[in-house]
Image 1 (cartoon, rainbow, N blue to C red):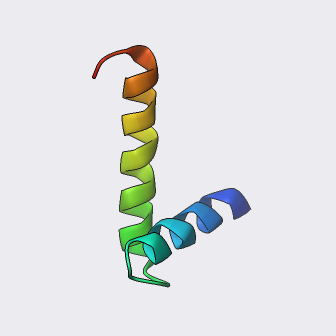
Image 2: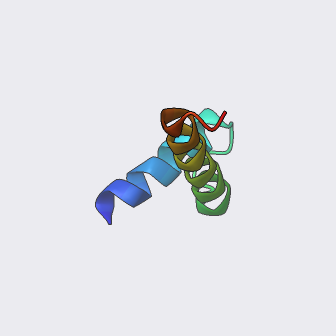
Length: 43
């Protein structure tokens, strides 16, 4: 759980919205799916 919160905060900071958990969670989730798709050769 700590890692998930850290990923959300890092993603929000990188997007220019520090502390925005919703935006950070959406970005972190999207990146995780995109990386998995790339690893599988889908994209």
